[in-house]
Image (cartoon, rainbow, N blue to C red; front, top):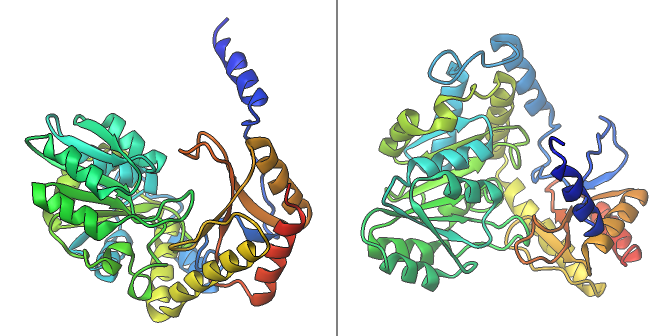
Length: 375
């Protein structure tokens, strides 16, 4: 029977407690949200929603084509200029998603005969970029610059090191300065995904590369998403102008994909301008993360110390993690639930988002609910 193997796969997932389901949320959800990636609380900000509406009224509901045909508007170019300026890079290129941006950066910068050195904790989009690239991939231990240097020393020819800046599972930060040093010793490029750093780390949320002194470096390429701190949708690649020009000509997820919708572009631009006007939002997100961690550990929970705005709490098993998250939801709190294969170490977790707009009372309520519902 066609696709008969799907039933066997479904049975295995069910027995392992790994079944995933869609849960549409209402526009006026009563839940306290610690599950989304809206780190700065901008997704519903009036300036951001008006930016989306104004762009849709001006440019229409969709981009109407690929970026190289009709999908580039003056708004896209404006967002690219301001993103590059904010993060300290020479140029930027906007994509329809952060996933597409990562696929573009890795595949276009790792030609046949090159080596890709990839952190074991990287996001799925970076992993898929490595799989699709024509270069050979070597996976190294998590956040281990010495392992990166050793891998680079075995290869003659073009090489690129690929890493998240902030890892989405535990919220720990990559040792960017040490990775850059290892790359420079061997003449390799460094490609980092700052999805969870933009808007949270660096001066006024300029990102983890800026915080590490790597902004504007001619051997560093950064990918970002517009769907987390900027509360919109889409992604971008930032770096030297010659790298961006290369992506325009070589990146398949740019050339063959419809451009980012004007509404998302307008929302991201409005959010970026708001962040630049109110840079304290970045520090507040980090402050909330620290407070969540301190309160959770004081309550006897196994919370991982955050380097940015992600706080994870260990769960005994996939089944208990799912039940814990469900009990939190029943008590009025939405939390993320990470289970294999989303977690590379096989340890299930609740994943909490430390949003800049959370009040002291909401933080206290969240910690109380998590503690009262623990398995």
